[in-house]
Length: 73
Image (cartoon, rainbow, N blue to C red; front, top):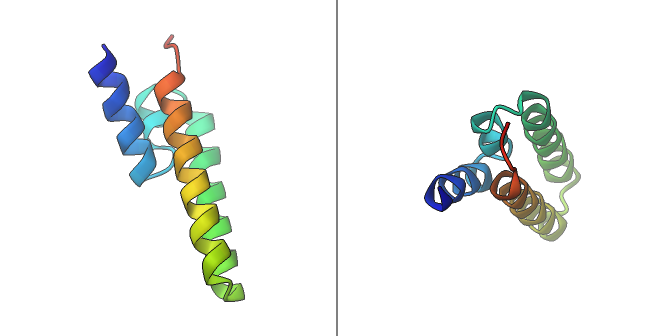
């Protein structure tokens, strides 16, 4: 089952929250997805390119880690 967890982690890295959706954890997935979108646009419009990139990577890594370590139902 490790490959299944790895697929969910990769999905959550590219679209934060998708791995949580796949795990059946809808609320947590929505928090990751909406939070990522809000932070991404806020930093983009503020024009802070470096911080925009760093925060985006950190959120994606955390979402992937969360999706990978989820134990299941």
